[in-house]
Image 1: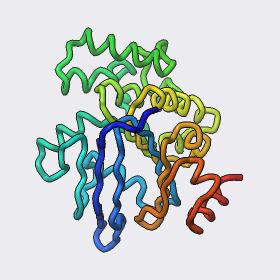
Image 2: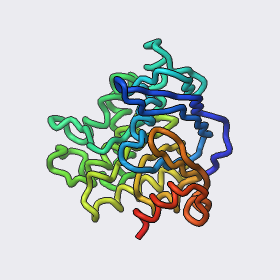
Image 3: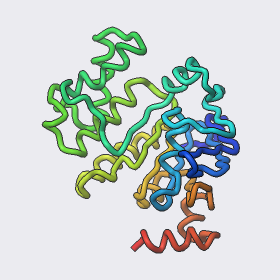
Length: 248
């Protein structure tokens, strides 16, 4: 895990409103190639909204977001270019129920990257091995456990060979015994040098894998630092209170 590469995501004074509700209040955050950043904080603090602005699933109204040298503006071509570089995994798996696991993974590479079926299937099978479920290739999502479905969702995101992976609370919809299998895949991915931003409450994962942790509260970054700094010596009372509530 290097995290010492060039700046791949630059967010400057990012603001977002939902009607009158000011959800993001001047976020400044720069992420380097190969860095693993965990964003944490209470519900409603703007964490998910923020990472959704990075691939324009939510539009920011003020400030600048630059991803891999391309500024996110209303230019549809820029948005399409950025989305090709970013893989995203959500709370809900969002798999197509009528397609097999293999078809779910190969769909975007065939349509967007214009890969041959053969190449897409080869890459998909390699990715299914990587996430530990190659034997599930020809099943439908409904035949899989939640943890398996989420691992398929990760493989599907990786099939587009993104430079950046965004995870929005990927384990929060899972039963406890399935959380580890998904976190193990994310840990391997982090160690492979992938640039990752993860919104999560999984503090063991953050402690083991993150280069940096960023604490959000009420639409602002309250504090950031290495896991060591955050867990052992948080500077802000709000951070201390939050950690005391989730670390038992």
